[in-house]
Image 1: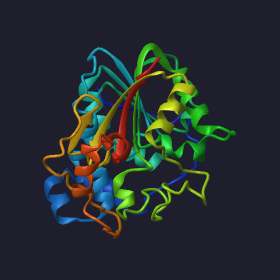
Image 2: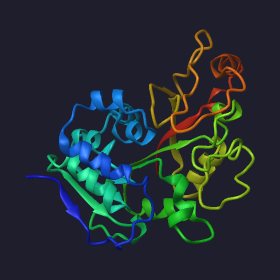
Image 3: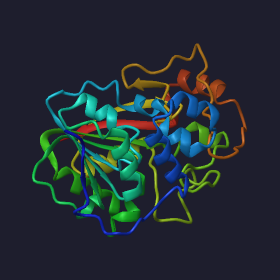
Length: 296
């Protein structure tokens, strides 16, 4: 048995890509090279982002019910898919890009509990509801593939229709007020300094949220029960994950958020700034990323 590859809902158009490096990623996966060797010798950001096992830290600690189903929306090249397959009895992974889905299939083809579906989630029909649905780095792009006046609400409401009444939606997303952005890191999606902080004045296609904004968005979209976690330095390469009940201490400075894909300003030492922020009880507002487990 092996993973299934479903092209029923594929439109034939590749809507986004990291470029030719995705062909390299596929060849690396096919060659079965030692990933530690690849990551130590190739410093390009797409290689690190798509192949680093650190990516799985965002979800591999979560106490999933083993005999459950999961819908992974925005699976990309499968950095997290394998961890989900290890933790659950059934995983369906949706991805817009056929090329990225092909990398995912090659990477996770031995999992017979996996089906990879290529297409826009909004256009796909499912014959079941799920115990878990994951949105890891996807919600911020809802305005790019959900075409209506309130795309973020509409996207979340559509997702809710595929979730069991006792199910959980798991979201990972940057905090538009993350301290790294005040310290000079570029906004992750637009590449502009202070862009999220000042309200994304020049784009309607991507958006992240502050904590209260995200809480309100989720509540308005039918997810009143919310548990916030805080991946550090961010959800993409999380080395630590704090919870509402176990926040970082001000005794030891948190390390600065690295910037792997481009140069950045370093206007001040984030670790030292976080010490004062934590002492004043404001860490949750300035955390760089959110991981939210939510439901009805």
